[in-house]
Image (cartoon, rainbow, N blue to C red; front, side):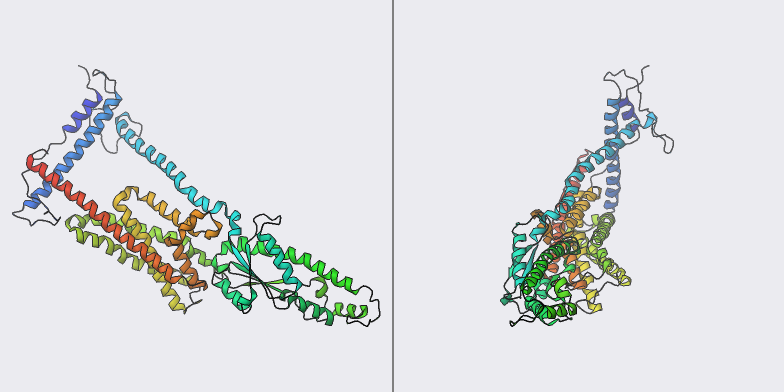
Length: 535
């Protein structure tokens, strides 16, 4: 007697295990609007049990069909092929090795699933990761997109005129430094009342940096040389202002080092030439006093000995960091902390997706939608407050702009807005993607947000300006305002985060309504099948 082939073996084994239940014609569980019908004479319990048995039977048939197809591919096409991989005897739990022939069919299913996910992840990686790499790759080439001011208060002085010519040539690319410079705009000194106005402009993000040639810088040096003023300070000639807290990466890596280098080289050349010109004017005076207004050589030597800095280093500059990045721990809440917020809210989404299956099928569509929106928003309250509280032992400077307590609670509100914007986005998408594929959406959400916030958009290709309207950028910008007193964008930041929340609320409601309609339609089709005896 010939052994049955693999397909027949699987069909006989599984079909002998399951017997379709006998189901009487049930009454509809839901009315036309999706509301549950009233239970009469215990019919609902009977229908529920019958539904559970029939679903179990259909799942069993599906497994049988799948294993049957696998079994048919294992043997030869001829009906007389012996069974090689799948035995008629049922498998026993905890009894087999991975390479046992009895589990060949299951091993193939398992392998296909893992190979499929690896291939999908490789393709997904090539789509998403380059977005983040691209946000960092060419930052040095975009430094000229960052603009600074050059303000010359040295009216008629040679120093101011020299710096205007030098930095204009740098901005026009007429030097050999390539793109290692900012774009410098010459500001009219009549539009500003002094260096205080310039500092305020830099603090309010009107410019990334400013070079100020101070009032009478050239004349102050000439007078110090003529009188031997030992108190003369060469650094008082120029002030270089920048805003480190606006973006510490841009300030530390590009703005300060590039500009300081250019100032040093420019001032070194000018000082040498200016001192040489001064020494040439003294030629011919000899050791005697002349009748002109210039002092004699002996007197010049005396004044030079009293104020040697007027010859050795006549002009220099002072750095003024108008908004210093005073708290290194702030890095934990500016960007990386936003990723933590996204992950915490994602965990809430997955938990809510599993937990609502307990009660969701028994709720009306309206009540179900409200539950899906309100429950996460309530969960974000203690989570965001706990996250904000963790920062207190590490002394974030919440009192920089407001009182310490006021700054803390204001930051907590923005953390809550950010968590709601990111969390409800995942809540909306889990409806369509299901928890199985939500990991892919989480990667997209994190990479798209981080890429647009890791650097100023001026240091990135134009594509990354989208980050200005993304949650992480606005949460980070609001945080900088609160703890470093940078320009106040709080109204705009809150508005964008709230818009994200409202859009996610709307999409969650729409997706839930659509999926509920499909569930109701499938349930009615099953009920019709039960009545007609097709199942």
